[in-house]
Length: 445
Image (tube, rainbow, N blue to C red; front, side, top):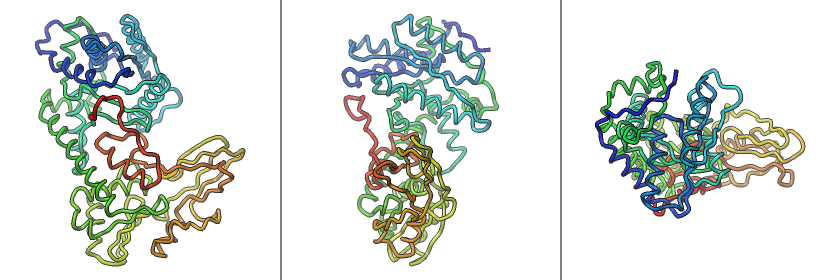
């Protein structure tokens, strides 16, 4: 059973790092910034709210507004009581609070991932509704170390990193992690020094969960993995910038669906920038949230030596070499038709968002049933142009009543700040909306 933990006067560690991190965040916020703090009632999020509130007063930043929200996933009997605990805590301090409830049927598999998506969807929608400039969450150095170790255990891909200091949620609002370099002990020490208790979730000790097993293996030694995660994040940002520059100089998109790359440039300037570019392009063109594995990326780069006409498939994409050019396009198989009722919108094949403004159900499928000439593919080799036409969405355009927009699938839900430069370079090339810069800081983060 979840209980509020009494403040523990025996904590012996300093809270200075936590106070400094909160102050650094507050001091960089733009004028009249509205920060929505996600608070579950646990020590990390409760500590974040307390520390930001204090930092705002110390800095004489009355222009900064703090509000709070708690997501009740409805997965445990105690969740409503936990949200009520946070609501009372905020009311006592004059902080506006809202409980956001995840309603509807819950999936039988992938529940934790679905709960995370629901949580961030609810928070981002609420942030937009109340005019918040940024969502702030209490992820700590411990969370960073655990996340990095879990990702390392799952893959040896060089692009692995920990959590970003800021992440764009669903293209709506930026999420910030001000305490990512602060240990959980320091945050609990800060709460204890102030006589503030928190809610402890016993599931944090349940070894059925991977994170708990990693936590126990680390046994508090989080500085090393945390530093490694920070370095990996910096390297990921460097790779993304290199990929963006590589595409700008040597890449081209045809008809929002086909990528063309200069193989000589990939060969000469390749390295991790080329892999990062290929990884993103394959995910976007294939309509997937993640790119292919490292082995597939290596095979793509080896197509250069295979010569004209060499081809392969991976990640729902076809790759073909034509002279010194590499073409990447959606392969024919696995493109399913999509029915969209009147007034509804949905995503076709992970690649195009389609809004039906007509008064009847429309069916979106691949091919040239609408009779369009697809002039945008005329610069492609003829065989590839036929494949591109066969996999492009066929849409009856009834005087603007069927509206489409390109989706960049790997960035549709979560865009880590590491990848923003590359994401916006590709968004412009694919004819998609560019992603907003984080504007809640006075200067770049």
